[in-house]
Length: 364
Length: 264
Ligand SMILES: Nc1ncnc2c1ncn2[C@@H]1O[C@H](COP(=O)(O)OP(=O)(O)OP(=O)(O)O)[C@@H](O)[C@H]1O
Ligand SMILES: [Mg+2]
Image 1 (cartoon, rainbow over the protein chains, first blue to last red):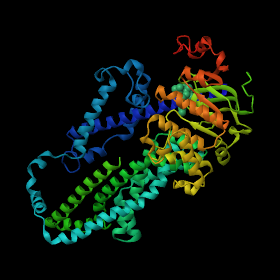
Image 2 (cartoon, each protein chain N blue to C red):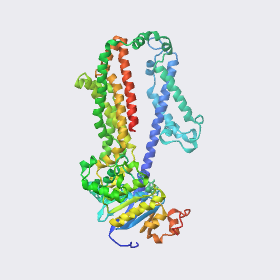
Image 3 (cartoon, rainbow over the protein chains, first blue to last red):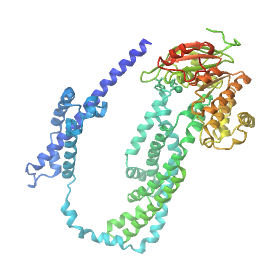
Image 4 (cartoon, helix red, strand yellow):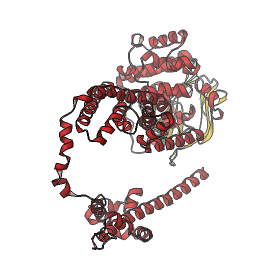
């Protein structure tokens, strides 16, 4: 037993050092970001002029920042803060990673360095963001007339495109449906592998968990629009490419939702079924599936709803559905026809929303 | 060790069982125990003393960190995979929270006790051989729930749900029953009736029972032998008759008083 406790303490030592390093990294990152934002504001307001003779644009100002120096300085600063945290209070990284010690817990934010840093950080983010995104309030408030053509077109929909629009709308809804339907079995199977509470058993299971999780995160991180481009060159322009693009994205999204649901089940029935001597498939069928079925259905319908919305955009690049005829109308500035199509989409999305909410209400 | 009444074969044997949970909690320390066939062993101890861990180490719902466990002549701790499942079939378990599959019918819940020997594919579609269905219905009738087979499990009261769980254990045709505070979530009035049913079953079928309990009244009435845990150690083992106020203090600490004077 002595050996056991020995390993336990080494592990906690290691964990502590890792936590310290993590806190330091978070601090360095936060301080560097804050430093860079401050420098950006200083450069932008120093009255320097860019090559065009105008005051510096945000991009030019970003070019001038001293990223490397700032990072190095802030690593030193973060280290110092963590070193003297007993006197000047915990650093934000330490508070995030390891929590604050008791004597600090009840202090109001205005009495801690960390609190002031947080306030400064938020202010800096706001003002730096204002500059970088080139917020232009005067244009927003005074130049509406330029857009009035579009708005007039949108509220005077043209009937000429109604028939074609409805036909493609039907295609859109089915496209979303097929993408969801193809996604269900695969997401269902993968979600068991992506649930942490079911994959603790063996090294193989834990490996599969990591692989599935990583794969799904990657798939989800790639925009459906990009998937659409990939599948368009694969199977050609048309609704099937759209189905595939939404399908792969749905698999990733549903796997994540399903597996989170599996992770929150009551393990009691799983134990009870395991205790009867049942095999792993039987344990899943009896201990897990009945608990997750209603939420799975609800997520799936919600996903169909989302897919209808996304398929419009997919159509823009050639993935079929109503977006396919919307794009050229926008490019040609035929705002009356655009108005018709937008209205059709809005009505469908609204209906889907109501229907899916009703069904989900029933199930849960 | 006191010779148990009957003095049959050893049904469950633990030897030097230790359990350390991830995170470092030492739930059991060097627990050795022998339970003979037909005994009704009650495990006592404060909350957190390791009772559930002890029971779960026996059917390997929890893997002991050290030590060995036997069910009759087979070593549980040496078995893996299909062999482990085969051994588990001999050991049924009843839980404090019943742990029924709430959305399944009562009958399906009872039938799930036979999963270990039922053909895999039909069982995944909730189909069972006719013999098993008859047995399950008989077990339900025996627990006084003949007409409730078609109800959804969560439509039943707590007492009824626990009787369904006992029927499920019965359908498993076990040789040992582990019961983890089986009556703790029940009405005090129902506790005796459920314990009586478990006792009766164990007598009729010659089952060995290991049961953790909190209620001293029940302990005195049903146990043929006691084992008491404190901080993961066995601090008392013997017939319930020898169990007195001093031993009680030893288990529950010096501040505790027996809840009822039937004990002393
Ligand atoms: N899965 C687990 N992970 C980590 N620690 C656990 C786990 N299960 C139990 N423990 C710890 O092991 C110790 C013994 O727990 P156990 O559940 O066996 O006690 P118990 O006697 O059954 O208590 P109770 O009467 O409350 O059910 C406790 O300190 C508990 O916190
Ligand atoms: Mg317990």
